[in-house]
Image 1 (cartoon, rainbow, N blue to C red):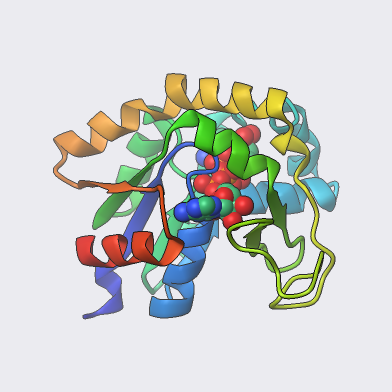
Image 2: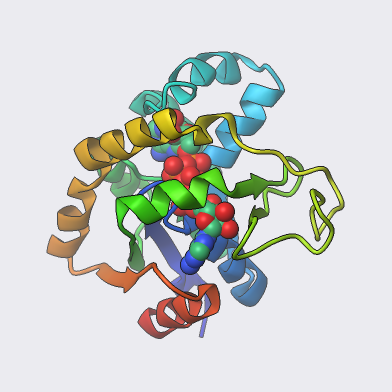
Length: 210
Ligand code: AP5
């Protein structure tokens, strides 16, 4: 299948597995993975102008303002010639409207997972600061304790993965991002995938939906 048919959005609450499945789509189909969360965390680490602004919102589990994120993503997406998977964008109706003005999306996959599972996942998540691979201490542990399988960097626990911030991220998700399920459903683009269970089985369901 031509790769340009794979312009995909992964929707879902925090911790639903967007990053995990986007990485598999990248490994398997060679799709470019664009994660707004990873881009913003990198900007925070590098203390860029964007990072200084974004940190204030991310630390509280709030969304970074639409105009900033839209500007960032427009530049990235319009420069791509190949298929891609968007992880964490769009997150508001305003972002979705803006996206539709510069690209046509082929598939929107919504990962469905309940809140209690999400909180547990994020407290056990460990992330690689270099290549952004995510692990879970129980379900997807690294081969060597504390080190990334891909690049060997020391793994870290995200500062916004504390239970209090996670609860706020879930609230923000329900208020701002959940409406996108209906938004893309009305455009006949949405496929719901059960995001609970075996990671490879979930990937198989995504493949079947494409
Ligand atoms: P972002 O980094 O996008 O965070 P998020 O959407 O809250 O999603 P996560 O990265 O927490 O989870 P995920 O769905 O990718 O799950 P993962 O695969 O890691 O955003 C962070 C912040 O940046 C936001 O709060 C906001 O401030 C800002 N931001 C980002 N985008 C923005 C935008 N568009 N507009 C405005 N602000 C924006 O999996 C989670 C854990 O579960 C891992 O440990 C994983 O190993 C494990 N896991 C995965 N699948 C399974 C499974 N099937 N079973 C068991 N464990 C599993």
